[in-house]
Length: 119
Image 1: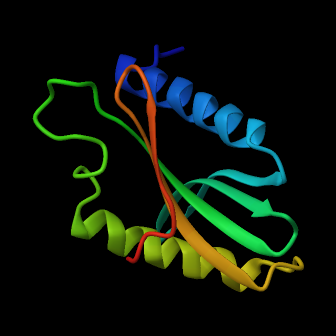
Image 2: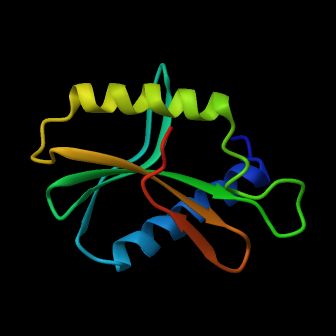
């Protein structure tokens, strides 16, 4: 069996940390982890207080790198994320009636949580 590249292992670890961080904040239920479709991928999907869907893009960029986690979300990534969200919403049958997109960026020491991004 092939060994996973270190960057993929790190990505999985950071996504698990992000999931735990957001669940600890309370009033959220995890609906999907790494939702993939032809259009793209959504790292985490939560239902918050049963009334709002929260689509979370998780980024990890260590301090001192060329680009921080927030700046690493390019126009192309935003476009793929929008398309993947549309696919998720087409299949969603829950109670939530609103949605937002959050960005959770890890810099090696702390989380930066940007809520309700405009894609």
